[in-house]
Picture 1: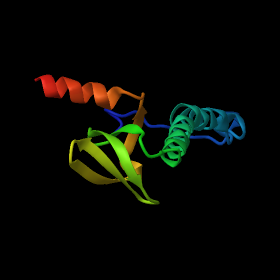
Picture 2: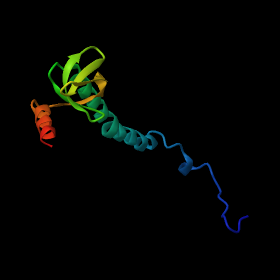
Picture 3: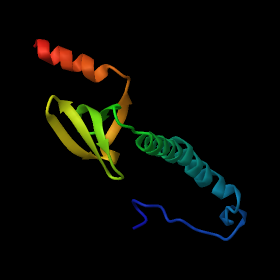
Picture 4: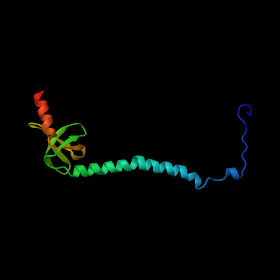
Length: 116
């Protein structure tokens, strides 16, 4: 057996001591990097989205996570009624609203679709 693999002789000497506090620096550094690079930005993004959803009002122009562009017609605690076109309205969950758009975006997109 010793032909391919050399025998390892372990002795309890100064090199075999427990790494202690110095051995924890690298894992703690990696955990801190993951926190600052991944977890903290995601928490900020979630907090901003929640604030935006709470600030929705009647007449706001929004885009949903499904890509629907519309104007808010009615609101309640959990759902939003969007007007997508004349006499076309859908209900979506408040959390499905991805972003607010500047005023006039919905009107401009309606004009483009009417010309086509």
